[in-house]
Image 1 (cartoon, protein in one colour):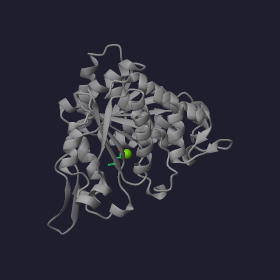
Image 2 (image 1 turned 60 degrees about the vertical axis):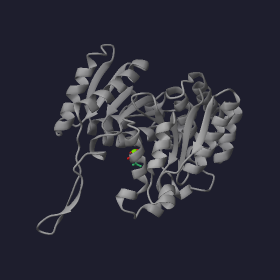
Image 3 (image 1 turned 30 degrees about the vertical axis):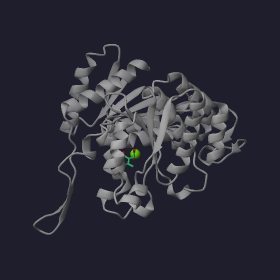
Image 4 (image 1 turned 90 degrees about the vertical axis):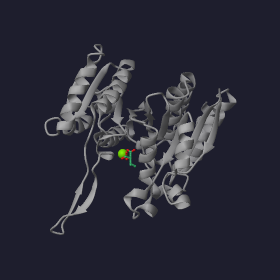
Length: 356
Ligand code: IPM
Ligand code: MG
């Protein structure tokens, strides 16, 4: 049966990088990939057109699709809008609306890019870790939230960090399942020395661990985890953590690999439906100039093939094609080093298609 992909380029470089990923999907269609693509608006582009960053109609189309390919959202043009209609809200609405609770953020160092990392090569060479970030709960969504004026006229702002046991259990299972398919090591990151909710998180993870006796489980406080990530990142295989800790740690992990422009992500529901997007943002400073690195988005297509479209062989092909263009010495500006050939967004996308 033909699978349906909803393509949401979003804002800024989102448009350029998604165009290259679409080229890759088109090329795979020639080789028998049975998918149909349709486009929609999200983020500032949707706010401009409809007054909100994600319409219910687009959310419905996402529900009806088998997978969503997303570029990036946001930009200075929309930064002064109220939080409720800012581009980022569109992203949060689609994550919540599709119940994409499990966010997989791999950080892989390509040997060809070892020089691009700011860390010493011996610290990062061979790095291959996976952060599993809880994506639809925690402080991002907790109630109550807001800013109120107290009796004395002073304002008071508040957000709530809340998890139910079932929310922790399902993200823990998701992480253990992934650990089983990788190096069978899982580190759960919390702040159990201070926050009750994450003390409970730790207990639930321990409980789930009983169903995965082969996985070596450890726990780490988030401050230490941040330090260990830059000190000795290769000690980690899979990390699982809350929404906000995962947001922060995944940016740090991304930079270990040299460029956030290389890293894909998958956000999955309980049934295999997923949204796929590069980890990086909309990079307004270089938008529209054909400079952005499309590889993170193209690698997100590989994750889509693997997790939602059940085409692991095609996923391998896409990942190999990316390695091949790196071997050829092609580099966008963000991963450029001397002796390589600097290329633009479209040239990079075309090279991947050729390598396929
Ligand atoms: C991310 C981003 C988003 C987040 C923003 C854009 C809402 O930083 O996907 O990591 O905080 O989740
Ligand atoms: Mg982030």
